[in-house]
Length: 392
Image (cartoon, rainbow, N blue to C red):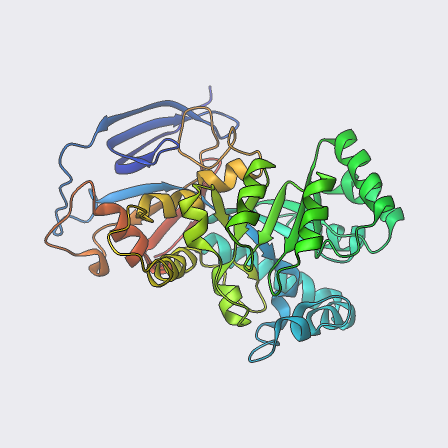
């Protein structure tokens, strides 16, 4: 007889709206799904700082919406260098290193980066994979024994590779739309429909290109734009009307000095976004740091007096959980703690000294978690109900 595993926690952010609940209880199915989820509405958040066991809060596993994990073996090779010099194909430092680097080094880099993401509470990431099918196979091999979930968006160098990319990955992740001609656009459209997969594209990271943007919109094959750093309000409106989703990578934009994402206009238009940490060679995969930085940018850029628009902490947390799941059609599997979804969650200990405050209620628990959480506060990480990380 199989013993049913049961979990209980004092507090948790439950459901797609990340509502604060208490006395969380659930069991685990044999497939690692949440069963029999029960909880109480949290009427009074009470933290006993002298008690070590009753102040745990659970959050959904975090989702990193945009990563280049393959370059993690050459960290800081682009320090104090420009975007084009560092990462632009085919002659950027990153691509030269990917060609010249030993397979063993690249595998080691991917494995260590995956472990780092898990220790930071990331249970799923979307990788924009270079080097065609060879690069896809390298990533699959590196992650073969890793519990973290990965969606791979492959990249082709010639039209003849497009079909194989769609067959071997979850879709295509273009470095730019500049080389998408009528032939390539038609091929991608055909196989995207056949395999029912995603197409994403880096766009307007360094320069706004209106003609290229109009072509991208007109072709209608892009599901997700990454960066959009130079897009204006009109561009964002056209994206919204075309149901194109947006991923922001604010810290990597800062690292390369390309500017700030148009976060004020995004919030004004209520565009759901998710967040990525981008190149691991340039940026540590820490999503709490990412949303903190984004919040500060919003505060600086949104200089309107008595503005009704606010970037609240719960929305920031949704960007790295349920929004990310929705952007990649994963919302029925992951992104929130709900019955029938995978038991992917992280455990945070509110007894940690950096959380101590004399005022703690249902409102300021969200900014407290967003503003103060460090990797050291993440005590346990679960994927499909299995503990995959514990910080002692």
